[in-house]
Length: 264
Image 1 (cartoon, rainbow, N blue to C red):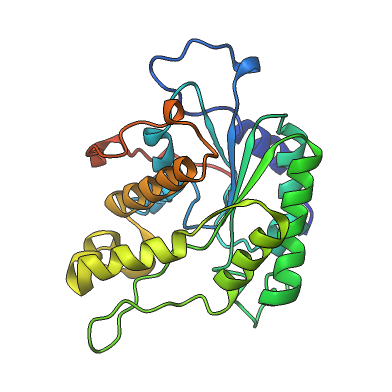
Image 2: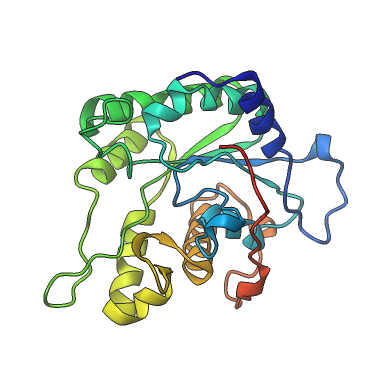
């Protein structure tokens, strides 16, 4: 399905920088922007979904030096459907030399029952991811791959278990072949859920009185994952020390806000 003109306009407006370091003074035309292409685990959430929170909503709390985040992640999208709907084209129409394109997909690529979203890890998944890499490079921007954040799953012995099959391995291999930075958020989040344990992890996912959601985050979970992402961006030298802040500080949950509405 192609994007309508209205949807393209909404997506372009969504790319307007939404968060700045308080000390920044550079004009917008001189700023780098960090773009996110991904699914519901990263996406902006709105008031009707609260307290569900995408990690992309919390990432600006860890960035500074006038590095805004343009979060194009959308619920339910795979690496394939994001491209097929024209959403990557929207980003490539906006992205500039020096910007960063951070790509995280797999949750919906795994849905073999849905041909509009399904990709096979070692063939079509890698093929679609290359479109993001090639597109960003053609614009003079830096592509970065991030393995999918893990779901909350534990075995009978209380061990955190993986849920993404071969997709993380396929992304790691692609990153090595293409010589792009890889943020291994799947491995880091799995280790975090293991440290927290079965009960404590419920405080990080969208568990409410009416829902037990082991995929999507609440504010503490989104903040925790965004901290992992920011730390990896620094560790892999995608960002410099001057570009990040608060990596070791507590982020108040009250900083998370949900706008009233939006068109996906």
